[in-house]
Length: 186
Image (cartoon, rainbow, N blue to C red):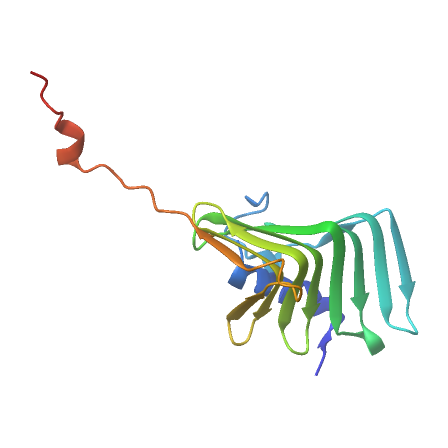
């Protein structure tokens, strides 16, 4: 059953926080989903009877540490029930700071789509998810199931765009013994 529209941002933030990770200007002890939601755009068109709201031009959403930006944001909400959120851009981007991991998570794609009924997110077209210092996933499509906490990345159908995962090594901390011992020169 679709979720009420006022829960859109909560679900979207929940997804982002589970999969991905902006130093919050808000109180860091208050969860993002309890922060005010601010949406700015050049234009807003609401078609209540169709259940479609479209934000266009320099769209920017911020709630706590979560930021989402794109050229167009479409919210499909028949009968006041949130069904789908689509962020389009060249690319659409998001970023979020994970308090648990103390790191940023960023992502981008030509389309970022969230389905509330199935609790899934699809990043399509030049998709990339990056956690600096940890890993980067690049693919034509990246699909995340919030309920199952599973991720799938697919290359393009023509075989040109493949899945690429880069794991960044953890910097080694010098041990006391290593840092004090210097090779002797003779």
